[in-house]
Length: 113
Image 1 (cartoon, helix red, strand yellow):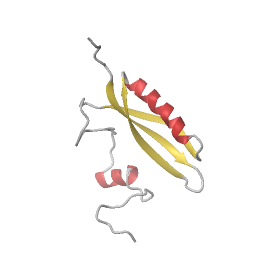
Image 2 (tube, one colour):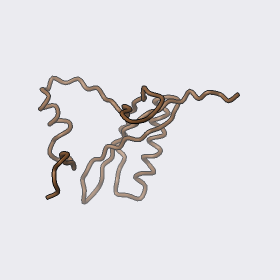
Image 3 (tube, helix red, strand yellow):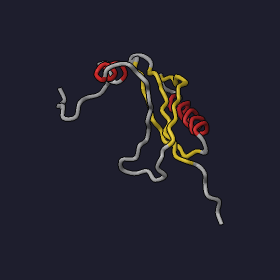
Image 4 (cartoon, one colour):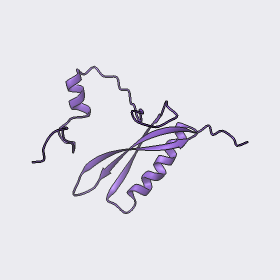
C-alpha cells in the first residue's frame, strides 16, 4: 500500500523588478505541491532565481504563500488571498494599492487605441 502524501497545494507570490529600459515591478504567483508553507516558499524562491537568470530582472526577496483550501484545483478555486487592515475608504484603497495609474492593464471591453 502506498503512503498518502501529506503535501498540499500552495500559491506563492514573488516580487521582481525589471531593469532598464522598463523600470517595472512584476508580481508572479506560482503553484506548488509542498509539505508546508515554508517548503513552498523555498521551491518558489529556487524557481525565481531560475526565472531571473540571464535577464535584466531582479528577485526582490519577497515571497508570500497561501495554502489552497481545496484539494482539487478547478474552476473558481481560490489560488491566493492576502488580508490587509486599512483605514482607507474603498476607492482610496484601490487607488493606493491596485490602480495607481502605472499598471499595465486595461478594462474589459476597452478597445485598443
